[in-house]
Amino acid sequence: MLSNLLSSINDNVYEFLDKLVFVNADITKSLSAIIGGNAHSGITLICNSLIYGFLLYYGISYLISHLTFSQIESPLQFIFKLLLCAIALNASEFLCSQLISMFSHISNMTCELGNYMFGFDVSFSGLIQDIIPKEYFLSNSFSLFSFDGIINTSISFGFLSLSISYVIRYIILKVLVIIAPFAILSLASSKSSWFFKSWFKSFIALLFLQIFVAIILLVCFIIDDRDRFLPAQIMYIGMIYSLFKANSFVREFIGGFSTDANFSFSNISSIFKGGNSK
Image (tube, rainbow, N blue to C red; front, side, top):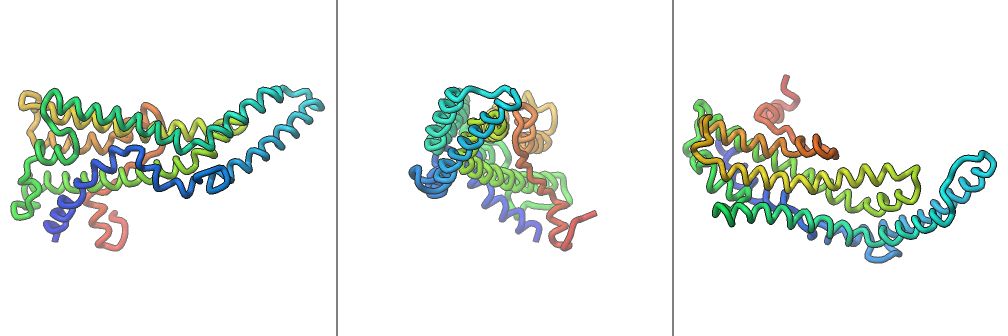
């Protein structure tokens, strides 16, 4: 049963890993109806309505400042900033798609660098075909009570964890694109600008992740026999683990959400037991 499970994972998971990791501007196309194609529909309509709320809030704050003698920005400065936010939030889908395209081009150039300089197809499918031996993915050669069987199991569940992790990232990216108009509008007030800073940091971190993954894949392809001071099987585990921990590395550098998915063999066992393993 375990052999059939691993075979099913290997046949299905790494086929769509490249599409999940290396996203492009197409990710925003299905969100047009939610965000709104114009200023009178979707999330954009809600944000345009909130502009009047920001005006009302500033008006009240400006009147109170004359009684409390507190410092507040000038009306001209606030109106100009609110006008810029209104223009930007109505073009939020375009701005997000251009930002995604920029990171997509950089990651693609990183992958193409490996193809140009070393003749490798730097991708997850290329990693399976050119780096990791095919016998690790053949069910008829699987034996759990062997070193290669343990490596097979670790690699298979590693790729399954990667796929779940990047599915979570894919969904969160869509959510961040949807709430982009709210994030942009929050810049209109210094009291709410923290929301945009948190949104922008998380959005950039998730996009930068695919560049970081492309660099890790490139390093995996250029490791030759002279670099393998450890057994090759251990190097394969290190490659998968590095890819799996890429999100944690990026969070240490930039910040943002965690999309790690702990999907180890013990977690699989707990499913069949009907609860968490202890």
